[in-house]
Length: 392
Image (cartoon, rainbow, N blue to C red; front, side):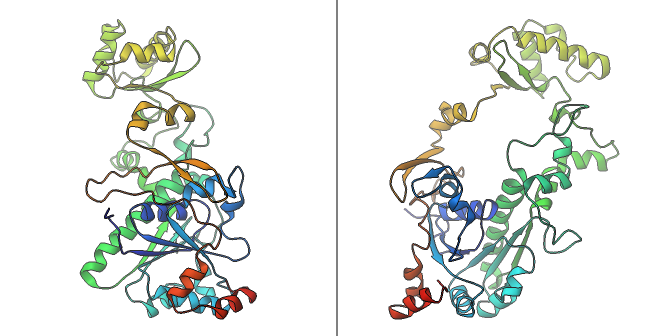
């Protein structure tokens, strides 16, 4: 079956989460992704428990459909091999701090000197310039600087750690994939590649566009938990149920709110959708009491087939067994190196003509080193000599 990125070749030097997730999305879409790993430790995620067979389950979840080779970029012969590989690839993805690849002698300028068509994507916390470019950090730091953590939590309460890695995934992996795909399309017109600078902090800022737009239009910046979309409205809220579980309500449009009020016997609240002050608190109190009268699952049965925006707050286990997620094929099982099987979350993109394909589990550490070296004319005794010199 044809895939969208057939023929596209990606050198993946990234580690941990954002870069590998980006390149896995590309691999699912058909790209030949070669994971280039340090010969001593490789991608740290390989060795993090819990394990699925020989390697960490989280590593396996982020690196399917890829090949792996060992290569020491600190060695002169390793740098030479990398640049020879660049000549035959389309994309490089790396996630080191700014300047590291340049100091190693394998940065963008060296790469494009070998291959002017190369697309070179750097995924970093703060970007290639600015006063924070050299700061260390992780998802929580980038989201904190960008303002997302400050908006998350109850009114008047402390900010809370988001339940998903919005900077790593939304600001890093997805923005990198968009940038790479855009650069590939541009290359079809211009014939040349380009540098793709992805800052995870920038990416989170882009996710705050709605709040920023209101502020730029003259409204005050929202306090934590007070915006309609962050918990400040009874129509867009999480309510506790009789069994101490929760349901979500997202009845922003008047027709949905009025129908909810009718169904729960409080049509008198139909015109109180966006009340402020004491009126809003009154609606909050009434709705909290209403939702405590039934269990979560009783409410879901009650609203089944009704035209209202209500859903359960699922646990992760419940979510992955949810009939909609099962129906959409979002979980797939693969055989893994070292024995055994493991379920994976599938690529969410649905394409009618060139769909993503799950071809293989994550590769063994350096599994394809000899194969890849053979592709650039290095074989036999030379490969063994490189191994003895700790180049591969």
